[in-house]
Image (tube, rainbow, N blue to C red; front, side):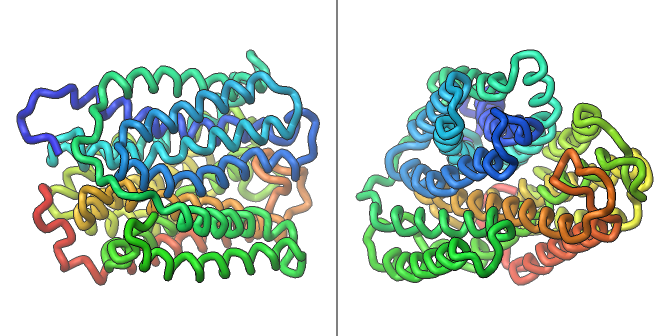
Length: 470
């Protein structure tokens, strides 16, 4: 880690790494408004463009995060940015739907930019600046997710759907140059032999698990595909865990990952990932639903997307606040405060859905809580794991957050489908849910936020950042 006072371009480094997070969000959300009509394929087929990115990210994130610790973080950042550039370029040039899925698979490798970028901040910045840098990284993710919805529609209107591939590709190419110039090679990579068997077992288990999460509701519990996915996920995980304890250089050091602070950080990441994505789905649904429903505001995709921007801006505004709380009270208190704020905001949102102002303010308050929680999680992890394992540990945390967002998407879609109102289909999902369905999802998100707060209590007094600047 860089010593205090050493002359460095800290601001530029933070800006470049944060923009890497924005690229990850943009490549996922810009495509959302176009899925129903993309290349004239069916709605079920078009969702594979999102699922492919998620699957590739889930498999590649622990691999590239581990290689970042072993071979160097800058190298893995450059590989991830190259994947986004290549995938985006391919997607913008092809016509065949299977090739588009391949392009999205390649782009999904970019998900590793998040944990590797956060771990790089630990190497590049003085200790006192790491909390605010991590908070800005979280802000960039939220900003990209919110801006991606209206931007995707705007780009498609002027450049066709190919523009939604070109934009991430060009940004990634520019960031490749910036990372190469500004980020230094890792001073002392951990080295060692890469755990190929562990990577294959975990990759297979995650693929099965995420297929189950994203497609299980559509397939049904008795479908052979569902049964195979459950069986494979459980079997491969049961093989992977003892292997990781036995191998000399594991893909994921389970001895470190099973310490209480890291376990709690991962559980909270799963829950907060769920509540953050539910916030976007609930807000988008309420803003775009027809005015004939008890809660709908009848806005277009473009206008609804613009009203989502304040919630994303809150992430940036909360960055110095979360950093100050973390430095003074530690990251556990930051996570606890954020989870409680989200729980209270969601509790109020169960009933406050009658105007654009209520929806936007409620979404911004939930976003503020998510910003606090997400900014504290990487700082908590880096305070308790060795520097040589920081990318690996953050990779697992990022992976669980992705599983949380996938669970939010699948669970919300299932609840909305069951409670479908007799209104036209929604612009956000395939159906327009009843007010009761919307309130149920909101209440479950409030419960998940409350559980995240409760999970923090066992380590609240443990001083999880002993020896780490606050």
